[in-house]
Image (cartoon, rainbow over all chains, first blue to last red; front, side):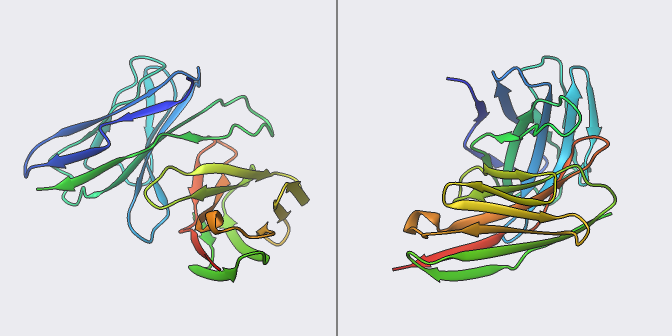
Length: 116
Length: 110
């Protein structure tokens, strides 16, 4: 089946620990995104990548890091520098064909991260 | 900067119509998206407007006025399964990033 797979579904982090959230897509999309969602708030962009081996900071990148070594994969690391990591993390991907094309972002099922 | 406003909550009766408004003030515009998100799940795409006017897709319609910075999502013949959060998002023309509103939680009552 084509789609976006995020793992794990639930993740617990201890104080001072780095954790990595996985995001894989087989839609052959060029662009991938990481969002954070807190209760009662909209999605906030953490990092995005429009092409392999390139990525840009979003609105709330501090305390997070990413890599884009393969087109299919865009893992997010939540570092110990992120002091309030408890949230729902969503990965998305899209074609970016330019102009007025829809370039719809499709989302994975999300990872819920909690601090122990 | 990006400023996208939606009402926080709306309640409607099964079979009725509900209109969710979205106003935006953004530094650029390359399309407006509506997503549906059930609690604890991923957002799913509903509609896309880039030119002024109404886009209809079954029970759901979306309208855009670029000059007014305004869109609405119209849900007709409401069903219980339509109880969800509805997210309005505006796309940046330079890098295709989406900026999201906080979402409108719609509760459908029997």
